[in-house]
Length: 261
Image (cartoon, rainbow, N blue to C red; front, top):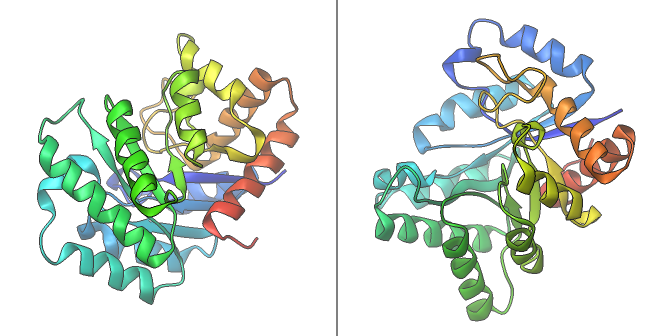
């Protein structure tokens, strides 16, 4: 079985002391590739170092909506320069809107749209963070599609929307990625969404070190090996085997991010 964890943050301090052991566990679990997301440009050097330490790691570059106030005149150039200079860059992000923890709406919109333009220019997919802003993210992407005639490619990461909202982004051509939240007992709408996503748009992730899945939910740190539990739950919800979901999501990740295993 081959699995791809399409969203990790293993540069965080909680992994510093035992990262090689964590790697051994993801290899034992069948995780053959990881896509490392990016929160802000200050992370670039640590993520680049990891990508060249671990051949199975690709990465994104971008600015998280909760860090939108850090955007300045140089940020786009920094993102573009790294994306053009390092072949392990496979996406722009994570970007998007988060109105749960912040209310700097205008700045978040500005940074989101700036990164969409950059991704289009570079012909790279986007990794979208969306929290308490589903309709607003849809509006931005729909406007982009209307202006350009086509939407940017990308994934709605750590998806938590209803089936109706899920269909909005499927209609815009996006992939939908499920994290450990799909294993939570009361996550009914997420589970319904996981059951209805079309097969060629389905992805899985851990978003580690956050959101450890059942049966590891009590642990303070999530890790890439646990993406297997996400695959198992998605398989149950869709009435398929874990092997089938692993193969499907691996194929989809390779297509979206241009990965070669």
